Structures are given as C-alpha cells and as structure tokens.
Length: 196
Image (cartoon, rainbow, N blue to C red; front, side):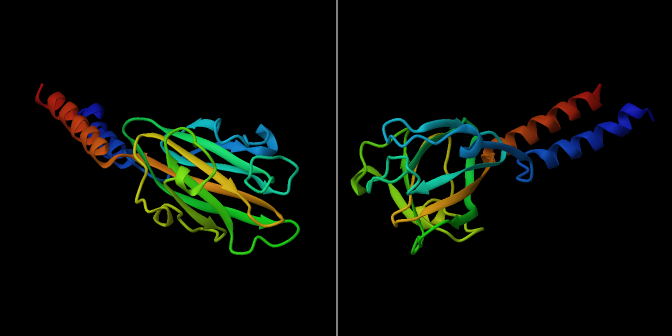
C-alpha cells in the first residue's frame, strides 16, 4: 500500500473535524486603545467583517469625553458584516470593568438588523439588553439564537455617570448546511479518487 493511500483517510478525517470548528482563533476586530474610538454617530457605525473563529472588539463607553450617547456621553456604534455561509452563534462579555461611579445594572447594548440606526429611540432598534456579566452570551437576551449572513448593527452605551471598559467576544461558524455540504464534497472527491 502506498503512502498516498494511507494518508488520504487521515487527511479526510482531519479536514472534516476542522469544518465548522468553533475553536479556531480569529482576530481582534477593534481595540479602541490601538485603533481609535469607535464612532459615536448612529448613522455611521464602524463597519467590520467577520470570518470563522472567535473575534473580539473592545472599548470604553460613558463619561470619556467623546460623544454619541443619548445622555451626551460616549457611545460606540459598529456594524458586523457576516459573509454568506457563516453565522454568529454567540456574543459574550469577555471583560467588563468601570473606573469611577457605578454602572448600576449594566451597560446598554442595542441591536438592529442592518448596517446602521435611524435614530436613538427604542423604535429604532430591534432588540436591546443590559450587559455586565462576564461569560454571558448576549444573543438569547436579544431574542436570537444566532445571526445569519448579512449586516448587523450594534449600539453600546453606558447610562450612568461612569466610564466602563468592555470587551465582547464573537463566535462565528459556518452555517450547518454549509459544513455538511463541504463534508459531502470532500467525501465525493476522496471516493472518486479511490475508484481510479
């Protein structure tokens, strides 16, 4: 038996295990300490594109001296573009701390399907939640199991007189049907080669 015939099943098994693997590490999408302040304009969120894996974005909201929040403090607006064949399965609080004051019951996270917000009222968002608990997946609180391909806008704001430093983790995986199709395609390719 040739080495090629021995390695083919191992390569197939490895590739099937990697398809849809949620443990693939992604990138830092945005870090305000390095990339600058996320926009405070709800009409122009920072556009970011996700890929499979885990991604983070982090910043500061509240009384930072920047603007954009309904109370005159700093708000952060971003829009995540999820390419076809992928979905976001979790948005979790990675870190959450405050400098002066007390954030009370947490900071505000607004969500809207699309690339931006029409305004800063509850009629301008699809869902919202308060976040502070490290490790908590926020998607269920937004009434979602996942976010499919397309654009998704987020609005982060502190509603109390304090400064909050946060970091959110986003888990992106192939949609279930895409992973299954890729696995079937790999099986067909290997099966076709074996018959020759």
